[in-house]
Image (tube, rainbow, N blue to C red; front, side, top):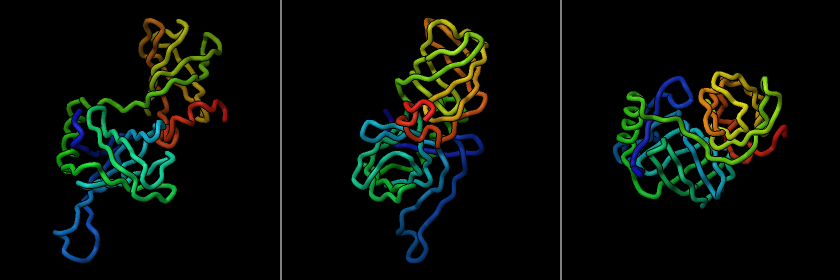
Length: 216
């Protein structure tokens, strides 16, 4: 797996804008270049997983806005895409954001370019959280429980009892998250892919722990 890259873009949850920031004062050429970004990443720590915002990145570190329970010294895995993975250690945490020192230096500019190129040619598959938890589904079939296999900001994959047919509209109640409506895009062999009409937010999926508290 390539772990030496990263990027950022425009209006949807996967994209934003890039600016170069340097600390004020001193010889700027001797200071690490930080690129301000607004990209969603999948972060894993101590068996817990969730989406986080990457706020800036340099060759040696990055800053995350995360809901995961982290503390200085914690080891993180940070997936910028399904093929670009970084690892690092938390060096500070203020209860909302955290600074991460990467396990090895990267070429942050090249990483951003790589991610952007992947998105342009359609190879930037939306990140998914891996989980095994239940959701409550409502539709013309009534109300029943389904098993979630993975989930992204815009959809999810579930196991079901055969009730889900392509084109069916369903309402889903998942953990402590507000009910969402979606459309079954495909269904086969007891599995279905659901596209949400209203995407989840990064806050909704900031931690897989939230997915287990139905109605909580």
